[in-house]
Image: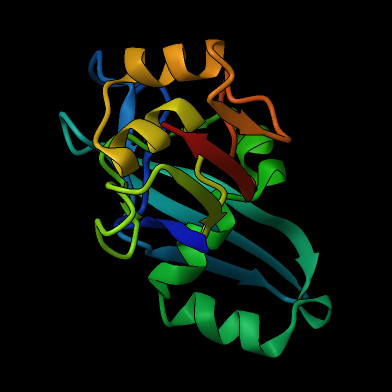
Amino acid sequence: MLENWVVKPVRIPLIRRRCHVCASDTFRTSGKFRVNANHKLIDVWLLALCTSCGETTKLTIMERMNVRSVRPELLDRLHDNDPSLAAELLQDPAVRRRNHVALDWDDAWRLDTGGSDHLDREVIDVSVRFAARIPVRPVRLIAEGCGLSRSEVEKLITDGKLVSAVRLSGKLSGDFTFTLKR
């Protein structure tokens, strides 16, 4: 029987960027946007506050775009300060690259295993699905989901008792499956 695990975000991740006022390097966004239109051109920024001093920074979302080229439903979401839109835009690699920021997912996600009835079986097949592009080490997910330490999971991989079509070292943010034989 195939188990289904889901990695879900529980909040918008912190934004890694150096604060120009204090020594902090993390910002938190509440999902508020600043939209500025000048005749037919529009600029949009996502506002974020420094976690230490509260200084505001603006992350560029759109710059000097023709208003007619922006979908009306997107404009509505921007004007409504839609927090789910902020989360979507932060996950866009182009937005992160343009603003020279990275995301800090520590304590911003959880693993839903659907219960612990799989812990006593000899062989389990698991499909791990990501509800958002959250970079997590598969070893950490497997350890958390199976109630093992990371070193025990590493040993299972070395012994060939934990197998997957994807490389289990490093970080993943895409769906994968694995089989664990105890």
